[in-house]
Length: 212
Image (tube, rainbow, N blue to C red; front, side, top):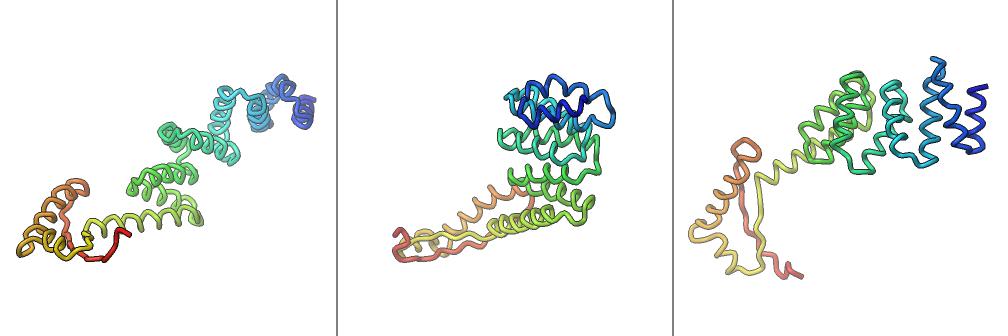
């Protein structure tokens, strides 16, 4: 009766009724997952976001394999821009369930979006190790490698653009003195950021009417 009453309440969208009877399901070990499912849906419907979030987090902890719970929680943090909170929660979930590939993937995705490619790659690697057919993790790992290569390439070569030959001569300087000085100053800024020496190739191109 308890399960049937709660399910009927969901079917007729009587969510206060659901919340009234759903606690009974928690008493049955075989229906605890249903308890979280029904309660989360009812709380969302009545707009109780605080209780909804707390119940959802409990559900994820109790049933880390439930992808519906996981995805709802991830989408919530992501939609609110609460990435630090999501990282903290993922770390907590990884500590409790280190073999769940999704948690490592989500953590990697967050650092990926922050342009922290080194951390993101390590997270994606772990997700792939746990789930060798994790296509999304492979794709994002490749994107990280590509972006790292682009950033490194950009640090190695840069181009000054002007539309006048006389400006080109000024930028180059006598016997290349000015462009050499630009390279020296640029290296001083770049090398501390990446932790290694760089070699810059600087060129000056004349592109007529580039401002148009």
